[in-house]
Length: 171
Ligand SMILES: Cc1cc2nc3c(=O)[nH]c(=O)nc-3n(C[C@H](O)[C@H](O)[C@H](O)COP(=O)(O)O)c2cc1C
Image (cartoon, rainbow, N blue to C red; front, side, top):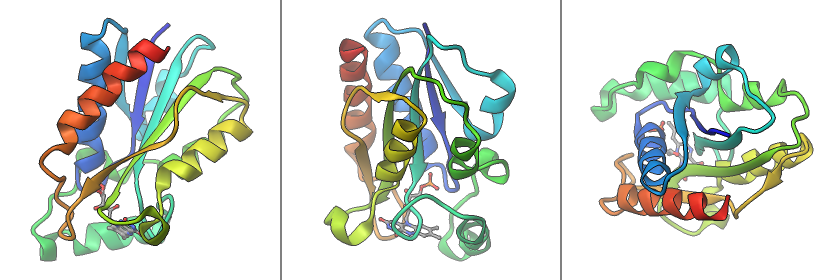
């Protein structure tokens, strides 16, 4: 069994959270691979793998081609760098083609600080799609928060680390 942490990231926040979750899982003794969504198809998945899938919240849910293009376009104006993984396939596209798996999974996102009812949460869409593909969700979807200028809040990487460690205990 490997815990495969799959992330989509335009500005690096979800990537950093995925790495922190991976460190938490590793320290708790779970075998882990952290991989960007554009590389996971080539890796393939085995029925024993536990999937942990994360993405940025775009327009209240998962990104679309238009929102990803807007993110790349707007990056220089906001002083943000585009993550190396950003040009590939998105979580929405990948999940849409995923075979029925029947394994275990968890979902997370990054999003703006504020009530989820106002910001939306990509992790809800991820969890819903994973369930539709027959996955059992081992924990509730989790959000990690950024400022209005798309910077991770200071405590969020530590919280992601803890969430990963907790996940290792659950699975
Ligand atoms: C095009 C676009 C749309 C966004 N829409 C939302 C949104 O509806 N709700 C929200 O909470 N955050 C929204 N955000 C903020 C991102 O969710 C946040 O910056 C996230 O941490 C980005 O993750 P990344 O650095 O991994 O790309 C949006 C960002 C972009 C670029």
